[in-house]
Length: 51
Ligand SMILES: Cc1cc2nc3c(=O)[nH]c(=O)nc-3n(C[C@H](O)[C@H](O)[C@H](O)COP(=O)(O)OP(=O)(O)OC[C@H]3O[C@@H](n4cnc5c(N)ncnc54)[C@H](O)[C@@H]3O)c2cc1C
Image (cartoon, rainbow, N blue to C red; front, side):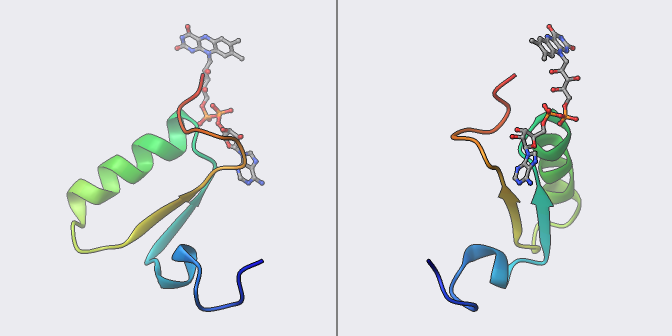
């Protein structure tokens, strides 16, 4: 278990919960609009956009 402060989400500007189509494309669009932002997707499954 990671302690607070060393997980990718601890250093993100935006954390998106769920890597389905909505989460994936929200991250992609936000990344284009705000390229300096650190965006993390937290997906409970093994891969994003699985459906
Ligand atoms: C069998 C099937 C076939 C389909 N075929 C088509 C098709 O051919 N064409 C079409 O346009 N649409 C299709 N759809 C519909 C399409 O899949 C959905 O409209 C789309 O996936 C919705 O995207 P979403 O990001 O809102 O939700 P989802 O795709 O359900 O993504 C949500 C994600 O969040 C994750 N998640 C949930 N809770 C947590 C949590 N607490 N922490 C971390 N991660 C979490 C889930 O694991 C999931 O990956 C199909 C759906 C199904 C079920």
